[in-house]
Image 1: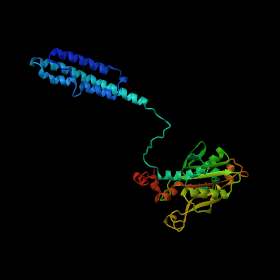
Image 2: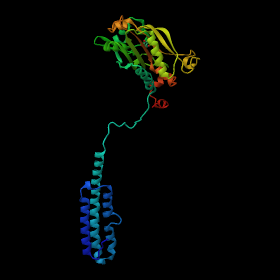
Image 3: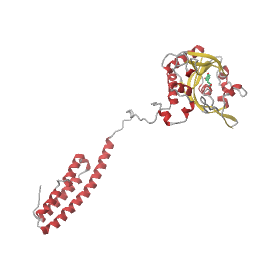
Image 4: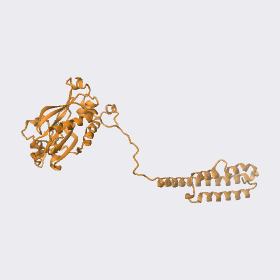
Length: 357
Ligand code: DAH
């Protein structure tokens, strides 16, 4: 390493050092990479840089020259340090831009899995019910939650004075445009929408919120139902029973015993309650089936002629079957929840207990 014996030598060395520094940091950034930049930093301001050596060399100078020489070295040292700082900032910004420009986004790659929260038990139950039906060819459709009297009652063969309206404690909304509006009391209203708007043949499933004015351990004002409708030529009870039996076997993952118990619904004739063998005790009788061996899961039947007529379908040519059930009840039995209200209180510790992905 060059050294100096007198002030004039030092001045020459410092001038040379300054010019070398300018050359090193003045080259275009494209010619540099991280390793070269680190070399520059060490070369001009590292512990073994010439400037450090020259500072040590001050001792060899006559005392009267030392002060002036020290000031010269320190001036260059300060210049280099502050210019180096600016240079490093510029280089890092350049290197980052270059990295970002080279980084190409392949939009066809699968996203990394993002997990936050967990699925709600009712959402899981809904999917568990809808998916097998979709695999069986049912088309998923949605319907409005605010319904006209026509779709919620009238089209489903529940005229204004019909006692069946009393089965369903309805939330009425203010009438508007000369019509009565309600919060739908059943997803069966979607049957009428589908028939009128899509026509026949038809094979649909719908799931969603329904509303009734009731509140206790097993009833809440906002709950969810799933609804299915098949309309085509020559549809009969055997089709319905087979569909239900395949459906419930898919839902429970094994063949299940099914019982159709004669019942009444205005929009089906004949109508039945759907009972499925209790999945806890397999028919022996236990607490969850109230010792009957059966779970009552929903209603079904052949579509009433009047429904088809009201929706513009010729009941002498077309016929169909429908079934519907409450989703919450099924979620309760699947996840062993004893108070229905817990499913809707949004209590985080309660929901965390399920660990549902
Ligand atoms: N809508 C009925 C209820 O809320 C359930 C139901 C019964 C749906 C029979 C149907 C059916 O599609 O055919 O209680």
